[in-house]
Image (cartoon, rainbow, N blue to C red; front, side):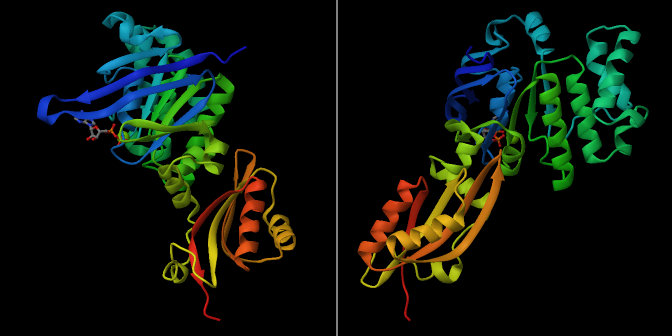
Length: 352
Ligand SMILES: Nc1ncnc2c1ncn2[C@@H]1O[C@H](COP(=O)(O)OP(=O)(O)O)[C@@H](O)[C@H]1O
Ligand SMILES: [Mg+2]
């Protein structure tokens, strides 16, 4: 059975303002998120991430296109029906957006009060959410008495109060330190597993994508330019921008001393410098030593990093192939045959 689609954006465009001052924030975006997935949208600042996620619950209305959540086309609903449909969509924000004059309990209870639930039902709903989010002993505290991580937990509990099927997260961990970030991401993953909640999150941090997303879309200037399973995204990026994100995340760049001597074209006596990416079960050391033996060549490893991403291994390496031109050509073919992503960064000539 095909996965049921929980969130569908079809040909969504968003233009802010008009005439001379018009800003196109989204261009013909198509995004389908199956039920139970954690889908990340990553992009640089100003790329249109917040606009995209706000179009899902129509906090922003798309200029053109259709938005459906749980098989209901939101863009076709009248206001009253839309308000009811929104109970099925929770949202959390970078700056938590809690009411400072309300206790933790009353913040979580707020959406239920707005739904006119009676006090007993509200209590029965809120208490388990405080337990789930680790806030059982904070029910009577005020937001000012909480840490950033605790505030985001309150926001998560509040977002879950109406028992949504979808949770939207707009840079939910961007205001938090790394340790708190990982505890909040752990909570989101737990909620996804336990409640089967579909999560769409936007972020500018690869760490977030790596930690909990199943699939990821890359947004650039309002366009989705790449969409992939997270392991594939890290190991076989298709766009320059994706490679930039990955390289920044892995922080693997050739040493400056090498860059200073890197030339675009080979010259007599020069050697190619490669960026190698491998994934899956390939382990760098045997592959490299096998390559050295098979092609009778020397390989000098200048930088290397191994990351574990969604039960897969991603290795990145910057290496220089040292040997005569026909041997280095052979070695490049060997590497490509073994499913490595090979990028020739340039050529260096050693004066030794
Ligand atoms: N309410 C608005 N009015 C006008 N322009 C906006 C508005 N919101 C966002 N924009 C513009 O739309 C573009 C995308 O913004 P945004 O969706 O906030 O990007 P991101 O969340 O990726 O940083 C930016 O150029 C931004 O300045
Ligand atoms: Mg934003």
